[in-house]
Amino acid sequence: MRKVLCMVVVFSLFLAFSAETPTASPRVVTIDVKLEKPILAVECLECHSEDVDPAEFADSVHGANACTSCHEDIVDLEKHAEGKYVPLPVSCGKCHKKETKEYHSSVHFIRENFTCTDCHSDIHYLQPWRGMKVRIIEKCTSCHEEENYVVSGHARAVLHGNNDSAVCSDCHGLHDTRVLHTAGRKYPVEARQFYTRACYKCHADENLMRRNNLSTIAVRTYEESVHGKVQKLGYPAAGCADCHTSHNILPKDNPKSTIHPQNLKKVCSRCHTGVNENFIKFIAHPDLHNWRKYPQLFWATVLMTALLIVVLLFFWGHTFLWWRKVYWEKQRLLAEGHLISDKLAHVENPGETYVRFKLRDRVLHLLVIFSFFGLAATGLPLKFPDAPWAAFLLNYIGGVPSAALIHRICAFVLIVAFMIVLGYCFHFIFFNKRAGRNWRERLFGPYSLLPRRKDWEDFVTMVKWFVDQGPPPKFDHWTYWEKFDFLAVFWGMGAIGITGLMMWWPQITAKFLPGWVINVARVVHSEEALLAVGFIFTVHFFNTHWIPTKWPMNYSIFTGRIYKWEFIEDRPLEYERLVKTGELEKLKAPFPNILANFFSGAVGLGALILGLFTVILIIWAFFA
Image (tube, rainbow, N blue to C red; front, side, top):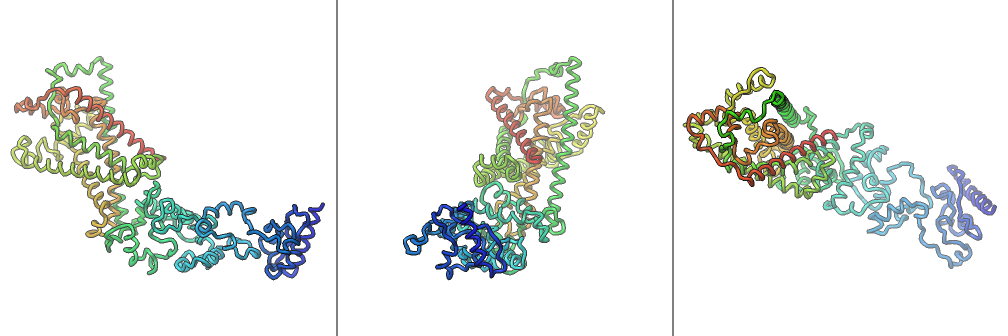
């Protein structure tokens, strides 16, 4: 009964004081019921009426509270009046627990030791927020005179009544303004990601953007860029605020904008050296699907995607038909009682071995294998940053810095291998007498890797054999698919190598070419690398190892040897020519020792398993 009486008395007094205020409304008033003698607001106001206006306090968000709800240490009014009970600072956390917890980790508390009333100085007259963002601007700019923000597009939109636009709290938080936000340009990765996510809150919201006649294209194109992919994987890269700054957000055509052409050199120079007029023509947010705005990028993407699809689909079809024919043929022979060894019966000493690949060829092949796997392992996480395995693989390698270093070392090894092959080609054309008497015979003879008319005839005959319309073709030193393997890799290494160097040293590229060429280089590099990985780990592996007649592996590229029966069966034209000229005996070599075979099997099978696993990761990335 006593509790109810106290609440009624205090409620009546508040109504009396606020009667002259037309906006006043009835409230539920709370007081500290633990007091032996209730302290009414009217008693407090006898002394504090000059400090607190009763009507305005009654209309504030705290108007329903008694004075002792906040000043709870005043339990005896007489002793307080005598100066014996002096109130301690008010603890807002008694009611505002969530805000207090957030605030205790903020920069304002940790570095400045601000109290709640430093911002909420009008604590007795505080009005409901009602989502009026302009009040946040007014409050923050009372200390932070951020002129850049006030003239920015965000602030002007808010001041014109658009509550969708960003104010200080949308980016920095309201009570949880973290310490890392004040660390300037060298803030940690966590802060950079935080700022980018802050921009995403609005610019990735399709409904919000549509409501304001804007698009989410900036977010999508940023995520497709190198900067966006690296940051998505959790490592340092330029975020939204690095280029657009955090406050001076202005249209590109505004001379004060950081992305205005006359300011881009300064912005890009924060991270890159050698920035010139060509460099700033790099497209930071390229929309590869917009053929009107970026025709060069659109057509580069179309051509590379078409090349990827056409090559893989054609050779996957070729591979499937080949596998079907060989597997079905093998099953037929076994069903008819013909053993695999039957085909060796007419061959004298079928186990004799001959040199097919010299030591230099095998070493070069090993270098290419290891460097290729290194490039794939360090490049694929950046190609598919959203894949579930991307961050794990990148962290296992040692992060972006380690991956970049390994990628460049492997690229250097591959470039050296490419130059060695060019040297081989030069020597073959002008000095290799075994391949022909002059450069014309060498270039268009059976030992050349250039396509010739017989390759087309072999391909047609092979397809007919696939569909049971004739015998298989008789091959010479190189088959048509081996020539394609070589030329595809040769072209691929050139395309990937040149574009890789352009991206490796963009400041040098920009001395001669406009920056958008680096965008094109990235498209070519990315798609050609994916084509190379897909082709090598599926088509090439099948052609050389997974075909049923070679399964589980063809050892010749590792041991350098080829069996006599295999020579006769796979390359009968070359074998007959060597027998006729008497050169076959010169190629005879002893059978590989057990260590050579063991090493060949370990490396070869390991590469096959790793390649198959890589293909699984790529498929996973596409469908995850």
